[in-house]
Amino acid sequence: MCSKPFRHFPMPDLLTSDTSRREFMRTLSLGAGASLLGASALASPLDWLAPERKLGVALVGLGNYSTGQLAPALQQTKYCQLAGVVTGSPAKAAQWQKQYGIPAKNCYDYQTFDRIIDNPAIDIVYVVLPNALHAEYVVRAAQAGKHVICEKPMATSVADARRMIAAMQKAGKKFSVGYRLHFEPHNQAMMRLGQTQAYGKITHLAADNGFRFGSGGTPWRLNKKLSGGGPLMDMGIYCLQGCLYTKGQVPVSVTAKFTPETGTGIFKEVEAGLNWQLRFADGSVADCRTSYTENVSRLRAETANGWFELEPAFGYGGLAGRTSKNDGLLNLPNINQQAAQLDDFAQCVLLNKPTRVPGEMGLRDVQLLEAIYRAAETGQSAATTDVVQLIDRVKP
Ligand code: NAD
Image (cartoon, rainbow, N blue to C red):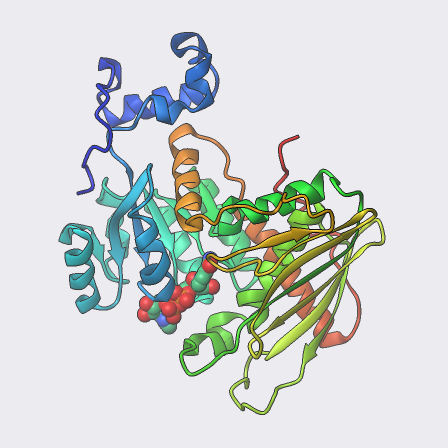
């Protein structure tokens, strides 16, 4: 399955080996291929010059997100496909082999994972484990010479995030965080409207994201050692991201307050909810709220000349937006976000392009998450001027 061709274009002779094809793609991405192929090919080189096979992705951790979202998305991707799995459950491995036609040689458990170094069918390792395990598996994947996508939050400490980036840099491979909304039309439009100041300067932002943690909730999310924290790590990170990419700036400070436990008795190690306020250099603020006791999903910007907002803003589908001008600029289609994210990363690998959601952005967010917790614990404003100054910029 992994070497199945997906296009029927004859490949030029010089591109018949994997290495020469990739080298050619690399040259193309650097612009030197322009005279060879003509300008139109450069607009979308992969559509013109298809790879012989889709890049192979191995999912590490076959829990809810891999099962419900990533594996189905990998049936829709153009440039990559589900080629392997890493799981502690032999029964799951057998089921996935059958369901997705994955060869047994591409299935690993957590002990045999490092042998993936010898498997050319796996190009990309996608780490979809509980938060505290991300660092170990990203470092091991780097040592195996694979490109890596790591789920959010990238790590449970700044130290781990730096260690992951260093390992990926040493490996010389591409590294991104599973920030699917950077590839989603409504959230991309929020970035565009905010960063280009389409309705004037943003004076205030509001973002809420949470869900009611019922009996179906996965227990590791309530275990601080495995999760690194409660809804802030899980859901609040979308509020943080949304405010930064809409405003187009990294904040300078934050204040925060935990919301009280509501009598469920389940939030012993992690917070039940948290409210925080980001302050930007121009004096504007973003009021954010995350919770494991409420179903909320909203991102709103107030501007000099009006407002624009998404509600719901952060889910896998059904996103909807509106603006004060009723101009339809947020009437957009919902797409398969994970397929778009995965295909973008595959193109970054094939064309040697930088990803818009690199490990450094994951580090920036872990730095901000730590600052929010520090502010909530001390009751003091925490400065955030020393965090990585990185924004996913819209094209002018
Ligand atoms: P999950 O609990 O459903 O799956 C986790 C998987 O890890 C399970 O298969 C479990 O068996 C395995 N695992 C291995 N070692 C484990 C250990 N020591 N303890 C517990 N489980 C262990 O969780 P999930 O919802 O799939 O989340 C996984 C990751 O994906 C998290 O980092 C989460 O934040 C992220 N996630 C991202 C999105 C998104 O929209 N980008 C959505 C959901 C989850």
